Image (cartoon, one colour):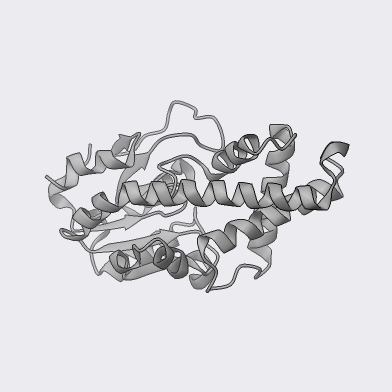
Length: 244
């Protein structure tokens, strides 16, 4: 049970929480592939997605100035390259100009999805920022500030703890300890809000923070045994607990 009266600071996850309302980004991108009529099975797509994330995690392809649109374009390009190299696209999709059109449409779909999600979340974040100090704790590529600036919410997060910058990645609890320390609070006075049970909720509990799980569509099926101090299914539900 959430103890709102004890909360003095908030740590937000970003990707999958603020920018997609709890829907894992693999699912959003898959929706974009489907909307663009790319002929591909979901199993093929998931392999390409994993390859892309591993590639970006190992190589400094995404730079600090890259916006969300820049980042998504790079992700889709890497996915397409892998799909082509593994001959997983049917023969009818092999024209270069067709690839360019598909990649742009997928990127545009994802950008629009993220912008709409951030706009939906903005009012709640602004209201929470009027009551608590906020910090962002995220597995990201070093461009978090550029992404937040592009979506005009950078002023709400003066503190950003970003994995590519601090050298610690979720689910390592240390990244949440860094967030708590940056807020200069006790862990019991901080609530962590995230969409990933394994990467946000479990390590945040380990540190001693209160937890709010934005439970929607994850990468894997849930076991049914997951717990958090509060479970919500829509970002706007936060206003019920923190902005009245």
